[in-house]
Each structure stands twice: as structure tokens, then as C-alpha cells.
Length: 128
Length: 171
Image 1 (cartoon, one colour):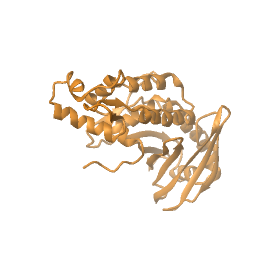
Image 2 (spheres, chains in turn brown, yellow; image 1 turned 90 degrees about the horizontal axis):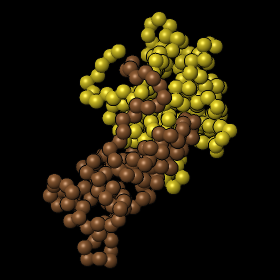
Image 3 (tube, chains in turn yellow, blue; image 1 turned 90 degrees about the vertical axis):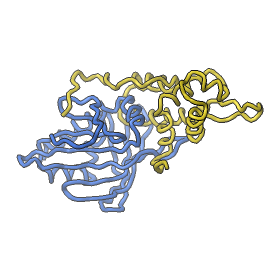
Image 4 (cartoon, chains in turn green, brown; image 1 turned 135 degrees about the vertical axis):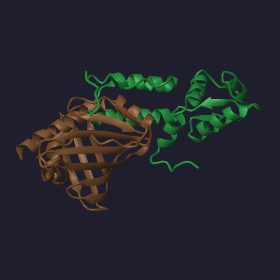
């Protein structure tokens, strides 16, 4: 059903593309939570939330606790660190600055809506 | 400029010289150079020319290998004073001189593995001695493009094309 990933991070980016999933990650950044807790803020059914959780799990962004019967979900930071590594390599090559990258990574960690990329220092933004 | 049926072309910080936009997971840079297409083609496909412009200002590039034929591989080493060398590499997937070629553009990231994807360069003869270059990089997703742009890559990319322009002016 999904397209074949083109690189190791494509699954992560695909998982992060959805605002509900970013909100779930933001909640888990504060600590583990049950599916019921995670479903509470959303106007959607528990099965719908579970579907999002499966996507996050496949992307390695969350895992299920083993000990407790209610299988709390916890955040896994590794894929986000991988994104940071990739971007830092990119920044180095292009001799870019940390200014915006720091913001981007903070947004990623806090899984907020992305800001529009409009502050690269140039003062004209006309197409073509 | 020709238009396409693509639903979502998003401007990504175009400058007076360079159009920069994305369509889905593709990031596109487009710029017109005052040079004939054959000369532009050579700047991209001859090792001693590539090494004179490739990379942002402050970097130098060594062409370790470039076997410009379908299935051939390429490897560039990028040096800069304030960082470790970075190796870029890939394979030529399609070649149509002097109009277009596609290669994979890859680099290794510690703990992650090879990153990158296909990249197509097209060279459009505008008929008046000028050539429009369009580089289409498949980044995989709009989110990956957000990240790449957040690194400040636009400045480096435009510097790279400024250097290309200078080389082309030498003939």
C-alpha cells in the first residue's frame, strides 16, 4: 500500500507529515501514555488513533511498553536524531547557518506545525 | 514560463536570479545563463570544469571519478577549511547530451546510512545564446524539503550557480 521508501528517513518524514501524529508525539515527549490518554484530546475514535499509532510505531518513533498491562506508548528519539544528523551534514555542505536549522529541529521535537520557509535572508520572493 | 498541471507548486524563496520552488517531494532550482547549451553541458560533464565551480564559495571540489554514461558512477570530494571533507557520489541513470541527464545524488550520514535520491538537470536552449538550467531534486517528501531548506542551503546553492556563471563567462 505504501510506496517503497527511497531512503532511511522517508518513513520518518511520512509519519511526521500528519498533524495528529505530530500532536501524539508532542504528548509523548512529556512521558509515556496509554492509547486512551492519547485519544482524549482528539475528536476521533480510538481505532482511528490506533491507526496513527501503528504508523508511528512502524516508523520507529514510538514503542509499546512491555511491563504494564496497558502497554503504554513511549517516544523513541532515534529517528529524530537521524534527521538532525542528515540535516547537519546538509548544512555543512552548503555552508549554511544553524539559525533556521535550530528552529526547524526545535519544531520537529515539539512537533508543532512547520513554519513557512520565508526567512532565508533574501528580500524578494517572486516566482520565476 | 510554461505551466504544468501540478496542483501544488510552492515558491521556496526565489531570488532575482533563481526560481526556487517545490512540487510535492521535488525541489526545483531554475536559472537562465548567458551561455550556449554545449558549454553548459561541458561544465557539468567534464571533470576539470566541474572542479572549478561545483560547491558554495569557500569550498573546493575534487572530482574523484565521473564516468558519464548510463550506469557509470561519479564521486566528488568537497573540502572546506572549517569542516571535514564530504563525499558525494552516485550513478548516472539517464544521459541525453546536451539536453539532460539524471543521476543519483547521495552522501553518507553517520548512524543513518546513504541519503539522497535522483536528481535531473535539464538544459534548455533558449535560442539566443542563453540556456535555462533546471535542477529537479527528488527529496522524497515536502517535510524533507522543509528540513533541507532550513539548513540555509539556498544561499549555498545560489553561490554555486554564481560560480558556474563565472566559469561560463570565461568560455
